[in-house]
Image 1 (spheres, helix red, strand yellow):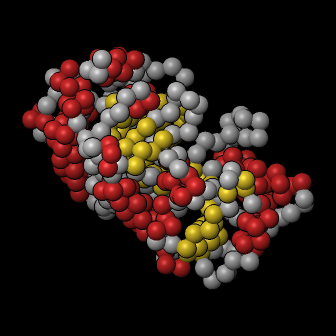
Image 2 (cartoon, rainbow, N blue to C red):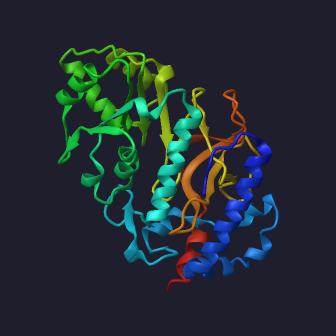
Length: 349
């Protein structure tokens, strides 16, 4: 499980114990992962202290695109897929326990990192509902809160209902917290629609913009957060201080939320290891490298993953949180995970 704790000592102790328990479980229950670990000659009895987590065998995201990796019967799971072209889609199997852990940690993050009450909040989601999302994890992940909060969706059959969305947020209850949620690319389509019609709003100070997904502009180029937040301010009237980004990918079972200082906090029970792209040794905090993580919140698959992302970690934040802080930089252009992938493929050939 993952959770948000207050003291660094408690965070490290909880993280180690939960990841150790998770590793032992998946080593026992996932045949392909156990064989993969055996190739590295790594067994549960070698996981004794915190730093031992650095050598837990981790799975490249490319493997989830080619084989099924599961610690339970996949017939009992929801198949969650990444977006992408045919042949490049990750498939991750989640059972009810894993999905519950995902939602539970996210609710705890919101309660811990923000100063508003969820029971006085309405979500306006620019994406499809969970029912329409099918197996696409991004839409499913951003719709999780409709189990506990009033949520409205504005994409149906792939069509964004611009006018309905603008009308609803313009007439939202000023006494309630208003959460706008969607990927930056959809916000940009909305802003383009507003710009063409010379529409500008000034939402209440209880309005918050949450983004999740890639930062691309209208031409498909990488967009800076500063230029994006300026557009949000001009067309929706929401200040940069009320703009928060969320990091997640289909292979991770935990959302990493930004706090009021706009830092993405890593909960206890989730551990980020940044590795040198050539040697794959752990690098020191503050230095960029390939992002890898150990996530103890998954019961249905081993969420010990080598990502396709470059970033770095620091510890502690001005908001008072004392755990790891995750900093995303960019996608990997070339990375030496081929050896790991070949080992995983080897045990399934």
